[in-house]
Image 1: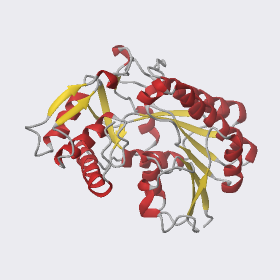
Image 2: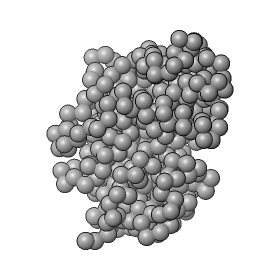
Image 3: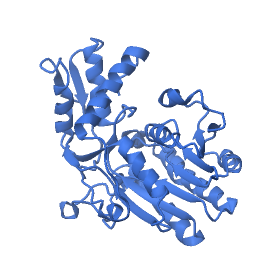
Length: 339
């Protein structure tokens, strides 16, 4: 069987590393991963023996450096691209909007321009957009389908609108076999503590180790979120990549089926701790966004019409695994910074 060459941008991130976990089980794949020269390898530590071998190869580059991306494409010459790399923190994007736009919009355009120049008509490309493009959604649009108007609520969301539109343009104008996903909240082990549920879990783990006082610092607790597990998310991506039913420029909402407020997620995580009766909650103004995407409930009917996606992880399992991830990480690495 012919070996397929797969490129994962952002391979050291939460999503990229879980995708690597999934795809590395297939011996018929040669996997290339884009990472920056200063990337941390914590998330892919279990693969270190295989890296730069016949199965997995890391290539350093930066989405803001077109020369490095063209070299990446020439070396990897992929049959499939999972473009996951991004400046992906909505809150951080308010203080770093230009970097966010350059990385996410220009970086995606560079990846697609380099793909076009490979002249490989069979290359298939996954562009990872975000449910954040819908932003501040009117209640009449709930649940959110792919035709709901964009109303981005952060520079990050604006950058993902740009990413989304650039991808659709390259599919239509140049015939590249691109599909776009707008994934709703997905979490689990390795989730960055820049995100609400992960910083809750990390603070709980720090409280349990008596590193900090029994106080959890929070932002907006009233936003509604629909949660999926990152391990189910990467399985969805793989199923789409290998489906014969997608068409160039297709856009798919993907998300879980359990919706609750951020407050309910916080309460659930707190109840998992033996410190639950001692913990106090404090809202910090710096954790509140100027504008928030507060109704994130997906309609994934279009996706389900072509893909049989059987989720393996319940909301409870996802949150338990997230908390245990932080308990283990703090014990082993002493990561005590609170974001």
